[in-house]
Structure formats: C-alpha cells, structure tokens
Image (cartoon, rainbow, N blue to C red):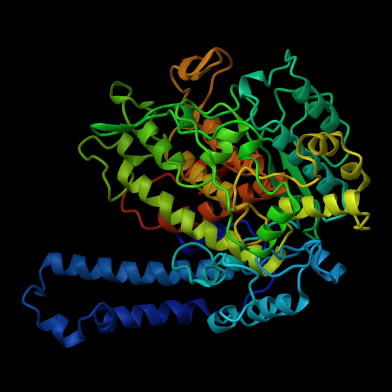
Length: 591
C-alpha cells in the first residue's frame, strides 16, 4: 500500500486540530535508527553486540531478519503519524453541569449528599480538582461518601500503541435533564422495571399482557422516544425495548444533534440473540446455555426506599444481595438479561467459539469472511499468528480494553451524565416532597411512574443490582461498548451474511429446554448486532443505564474497532483485500 493510499484510508473522524508534523523527517529518523543499529539497542542489544553475535552473519536469512526489523520500525512510525494526523474532534457535553449549580443533572454518586441526594459541593470540588489535574495523588484526595471507589478515571489516560488515542473518538451530547428525550428514556426505564419478570415470548403483536400493551402505547405517544417504531410510527409489542444505535447527525456541522437507527437484525426474530441461547463448545468441553437466574419478584428489586437509595448515592456498600433460583433455565426475562449483563458472561468469546467451531462439534460452522486470504491459498493454513480463530479471539480482549479507555474517558472528562437511579430520586422528591426540579412533564405524568408508585410505595426507580451502577457517569454505556467493539471485530472476520443453522428459542411451557424458532432467517451479522444491543439493554433492564447510553456506545466502539483493524491490516504479509463489514447503521465499510 502506498503512503497516499494509507492516508486515504485514515479513520473517518474529521480532524479539528493537530500539531503539524514533518512526515519526511519523522520517517527519516526511523530509517536512520534502523540502519545504524539503534533498533537493536531498543530491544536489548547494542549495535556492536548485534554485529558480533554468532548468528549475525551476512546470510540471506540475516538480511531478511534485518529487513523485517526495519519494516516493523517503519510501519510503527508511519501508522503513528497517520493516527496522529486524524486530530481531535469536538467533545460537547449536554451543558447540564454548567447549568445547574447544585449539580442535579450530573453524576455525583460516591460522594456525600444531603437527604435529597444533592451533592456536597466541597466534596464535588475535590473531584473536579482531580479531573482537571489528572494526577493520581489528587484522585486519592477525593472526598468519598462511602466505601465504594471511583471506577478507573486514570485508566482512560493510558497511551495506546495501536489504534487512536482516547480523545480522538467522539459521541454526540447526551440528552439534557429537562428534555423530552430524557423524559421518554426515563419512562422506558420505569416500564422496564415493571416488566422485568415478563417472559420475552409475550412480546408479540397478539399479546394480551396488560403491562406490555400499556408500555407500548405510552412510549408510542412520547415525542422524545427514540426506540424502534413501525412504519406508522407506532411502538409495537414486538419492537418494545429492542436496541438502537445513536450516531452523530452528519447534517449538523456543530456536532450537537444525534440520529437513532435500528441495527440490521436487531428487530428480527427472538429478542435474545442465538449466541446467548446455545451451548458454547470448547474443544472437549462446553459451557451450557442454561443459566443461574435470579428469583422473580420485588424481593430482588433494590434502591426503592429512601434509605437504600441515599446510601447508594453516597457510595455505601449494599446491605442486601440477589436471591437466585435453584433451577437453571435459558434466558427468558428482562431480569435474566440484566443478570447476564451484570458481568462475567462469555458473550462474544462464546460467539467466536460458536462461529469458529464445526456443526458436528456443536458450533455454527460459520464460514470465514470471503476476504480471508487462506480461503484461496491451497498449500498454507491459517493459525494463531494471523486469520485463525485464536488470532481472531485475541482481538476481543484487546479491542475491549481500548474501547473501555475511550468510553470511560468520555464518562469522566466530557459528559459525567446523571444515572437513571439518581434521576429517579429527582422524580421521587418532586412528586412526593414538592421539590421543584426542572423535569419534563412527560415523566411527571407518566403512567409508568404512577404504576411504579402503586407497586413500590415510592417514585424511586428500582434496580436489579443491589449496588446499583458503577461509580462513573452514565454516558456512554460501558457494557454495550464492549459488545459493540467485539461485534465489529467478529463481523470483520466471519461471513456476516451466513444464516445461522437450526435457530432456537426457549420453550414457553418449560424454559429449561429449547424449541425450534420458525421465522425470518437469522444471520451472523444480525445476531452479533443483537448480542451487542442485548448487553446494553440488559443494563437498561437493571435500571442503571439509559437507552441513549447503550445506543451512543455502538458507533463509538465501531470507530475504535475500525482504527485497530486499520493499523493491523498493514502488518500482514499475506495478500489481503481488506476488512469489510456492515456498520450498525447498515452502511458498508472497507478497510
């Protein structure tokens, strides 16, 4: 690939500012370092030692070794230049932190609060001081309200040696505290808390479930709702709580507006991805698809009282735990999905195993991406070095860590957006105690909120997790971003148009077993997209994230994956036509 072609293939984030770099000088230094033997010194050998080593003769192999070493250095320098030249895009928050002196629109959990959950401003100043200085010792001086720690603000400042730097990835601003969109997201969150124990097979257009019908009707009438609708603009039971992606509106040159789309496959077939339901093969072992699930009922809903809610806001340890059923079954409810997304699920590692394992061994036997060079090479096989399953799986934790750096950087240094459980406290104190908070009428008059009060005796938004959310801002969503970056990686390596064989769904009469799914075909790409949105919506079902959190993380994670794949593509010796896959908005990208 020529330098011009490499420059043309740079990531699609528009540069705003970048310090000028003399590329010729940069590459010239690299060439001199390699020629002088300084590269050998960098890996632990002085130039004279390298020349004197007995295996360093002037054989053809020695020349090949040196050429590969120079290629390594030159490519690293050139890719570093190309990535640097992308620049830094605008980073705009929703303005709530500056608008409200009391910080009621900002995530302040973990710090001390008054009875209404309003932060101690002196404690808040210790946090902002640390955020401004970005020094470890200042974060150690932050005044906490309990024992729960802040979740890794310093980790977001790590230097990336592959892909882009964390500030080079941007998301549009989150909805504002008083907006119709935030109100609609809150109404949706209250409905999800009420519907946690209703099985997904009841989400069909012929359903008689009163709560499902009421939720669909109320959300259909909200102007700020950005979830899926049918061609008539109606939120049907089958579309209820399905995932979306939140892209920056390309028509807005100020980078403030967002548009919502339903990723391909997410609205097709069962709510739950096939990758969650199937046993995961692993050589001579397997991970069962049946899960340990929480007991149903209000005993497993948390943060619904003033005492429990306020202790959580202050960062005090939870005093209750989740009670689990003794019967294992397949994922069937929103509560099940919330627990699946709680942490530690095999998710995309399992998806890679299912895709890369033959049907006879319990997998899907999915074909590799048509561009994989080993599909045309007749005397060479792929492996863990390049293009094989082990190589592909190695990308999953790497891309996850890079995406979390970018994601958490947004949480700490740009948005600091209020969490749903904190917002629920504003709703409660407005309606129960006449505290005049700037909340949109749609949330204050919502049927979902009234029903929640009837069920719980308060207006707080309950959580499926005793500890509530992690101690960092809500926007964008972390779990969904890991799902999104992993989905993008797998779509780049496997044939996403392949139809998954023998699809299944839980048996409504006995969810400890599976029955065949009959309906429109389910493709690899569609079910990977669905798995990514399942993880994000699982956190929404838990009551700790907004729809916009999960949706905004998908395009951001997609760009993180694209940047990593762009750098990786240049490393191959094999002739390779490039990575090509569908984005979450359905458009095609080729790297």
